[in-house]
Length: 143
Image (cartoon, rainbow, N blue to C red; front, side):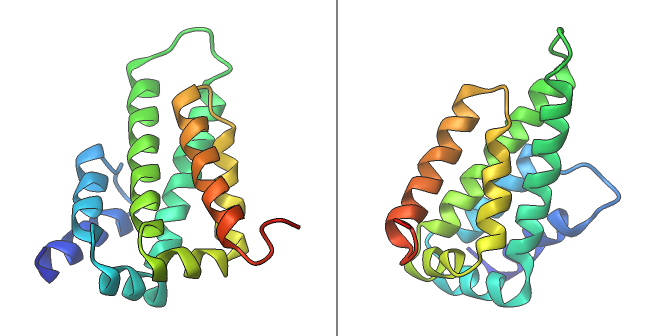
């Protein structure tokens, strides 16, 4: 994927004044897919932390809305965006450099674990799968 498309995908994530859409996150997933250098650069620039900031924020909002009896269209959209963020994390973890960098960032792993507070079983399953990979890969994973 062209570098300018990757820059556009990250720029959408960095804009705090607007809601990030599924298309924005899917654009990021496409930009990172099979691009080890882009993922390394994202870790070095702190952009991966922004991805986790957004994941944490949408996880918190979907968890807060889960106490309501009715599921609104906004709740469904939040869960869809949360799932897209988890796909982006999976792409980051899909490269050796991304996986090892994430293993060396316990704060990001902890923030990923916060997504377990979801009402959606598929979200929890995705998070557990990602955490299991980190546990098996990390030197401290079995401790």
